[in-house]
Amino acid sequence: MGFDRSGIEGALRRASTTRQVVVEPGAMARTGEILSSLTDGRTAVAVADETTFGLAGDVVTSSLEASGIAVQPPVILDDAPRLHADSAQVAVVRSALEDAPAGTIPVALGSGTLNDLTKRAAFEIGVPYIVVGTAASMDGYTASGASLVQDGFKTTLPCDAPIAVVSDPDLLADAPVPMTASGYGDLAGKVTAGADWLLADAVGVEPIQPDIWAMVQHPLHRALRDPGALRRRDVAAVEQLFLGLVMTGLAIQATGSSRPASGSEHQFSHLWEMRDLEVSHGFKVAFGTLWSTHIYEAVLTRSVQEIDWEGAGDRWPDLEQQEEEVRAHIDDPVMVTRALVEVRAKYVPKEILRARLATLRDEWAALHQRLRAQLIPSSELRDLLQRAGCPVTPEEIGLTPGQVRESVIAARQIRRRYTVLDLVLELGIRDEIVL
Image (tube, rainbow, N blue to C red; front, top):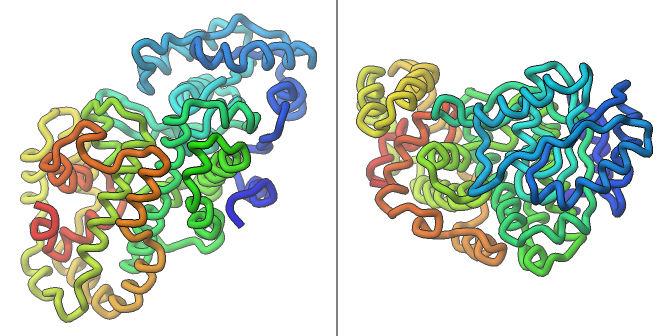
């Protein structure tokens, strides 16, 4: 089985904030009923752009009014040429919510950016919110935290997930095919995120939580098998994709960390986001997933005897050298400052690294086997992504091959999370593999 509604119901019992996920035909017409069942709020306001308000605004407004909820004039954000998930737009939404009657519940109509902007603005003024999803395009619907650009640096800001997610599978299937492909790319990223978690567990940095692992990873490979159905707008296939993306967010709520959903592939995506690559989040994650898989495969060609464990410890760059590398590979001053914080947070001295490498050496054969079972071979992954409509070459996301190789250095520097990008540096094989 892939992701299904029964699995979602079980995950909701573990979630910190979200209480209902309603994905069924006609669900939008139940928005007022759902909101009334979860809050005492008698006033609501839709937050949308012109496109999403056209898709869902009238149905949702009618539903709210039919439930006796007073509806404030909608907050319609300008999506031309593109709506950005940044602190400036959060301020716009927050200002509108502050002008509404106290206790007004925002209802986000849309997907990634609109959801994150509403999520953060609602959190800042201390009210819950619900989201009406219009596309299976990303995994942030039920995630705790909002992924936003603040002072030029892509970061995840703390905030509560929605109390409810509402969507109609027919509406999801009617979304532009590239948006659905973006969602497929984001879900595919959970494969390398899982591999990175296996790696972090093996070196004692971040132990796997088996129940959380099972929520995302057990149905994952099956859910990725038929991307062609998404391009055909198969309603059942798009619904399952949406449920998989929602499940990922619920896993984040349950564990209090984005570890179940985000690894090296998201480090690439966040870096490229900060460098203004104007392709969707899911497309950047898709190519990041393929690139991370190539790196894993290069590592996994090495037997335990082929790795210079002692030499790797001896050659480990000290903190000052790693800080200099940040300055050499990141040119934006704000990014440099934030990257230095991240690099310092995860730096370990040589004696700790040697102990970590000793553990890895002892477990290498078993870890090798677990990683091989987790990863999708790059040739197969490339085919799946192409069939979904995702980018599989640097040029398709606006990069040169050289820029992609350089990203292996900078992407590690912007997040303290332990991933394969750390492994190749610690083993002393990064430059040999990618540069």
